[in-house]
Length: 250
Figure 1 (cartoon, one colour):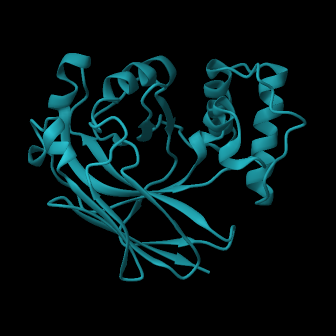
Figure 2 (cartoon, one colour):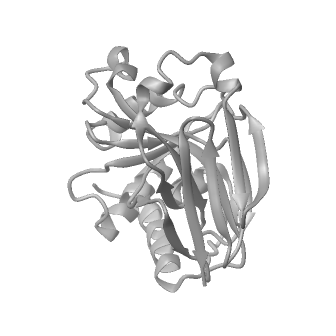
């Protein structure tokens, strides 16, 4: 992979932010940075850090009017511990993740290849000084502002096979922090269907990393969000699908 000088400069800035544990302030958030640039920078950071020698095995995907994705370098199993001292407050997202039991041959058999579903907690983190207020392409370049992912026990995907809009809208989700309900609702996925973006991801992965494979895990966007801090014990649950737990440690 050959990066332009501009792309390489951004890669180096993001790598330096990771090394120092401090936000990086670009000279300017260049509006000319487009989606092709963003995904090239994603790949450049991953290559420099040696994340995917055999290709990504986990992904995040989400969005409605603009769908975006990032390959994930590490997935933690619940109950997990997360070092919270890097920042005073963390944003977490309650999500569902799906694992492929078979390698899809194309969009037509994609959903039939899903093997399991599990509750997941995504930790949001950015290396950019402007954080979540940075322009969209810059956030995509910054690993789609991903910090970490925790997954709960996996359940057979048959439990949600055939779910339609009413089923997803009726699925209850809850975030508890230190034993107290912080957020809860029925439904809440931005598109109404957490599986809706998987065909887009199939094409994106084929174009950028060689495609989705049996065993790959995909987390599919936030149903609920909450802020947490060091010392907090977090539990995210979805009705009938289990829970994931996370301890934010000093």
